[in-house]
Length: 119
View 1 (cartoon, rainbow, N blue to C red):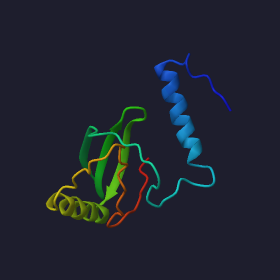
View 2: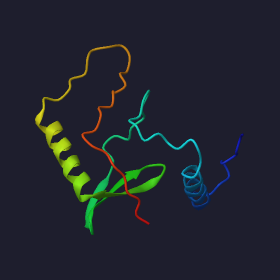
View 3: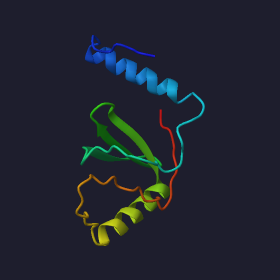
View 4: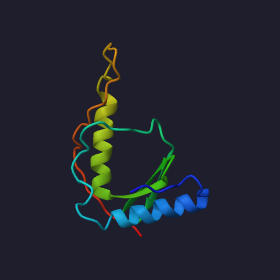
């Protein structure tokens, strides 16, 4: 299927992206809940905000194409995330190997994972 999005305004494109992501969430197979595999495209050093909310923390991360992505991190998951980030902060940084190709980072399994939707 080919959709010409070149004539869409910013508002129209934002509405299309929002509608598409809501629709995708209802389809099977679902987006895998396991760690991402294969080549990973990552946003380097994105803007982020943390805000305390009842039952945990609201984590907001800015994606240049999707806008602000919002995640409610429950109290228990927040503790696991803190532990994992502290562990990563205390270990020796990974140094890049000299190579003629660009290396794709291999994702490490999280200490724990979970998910909650806040509407």
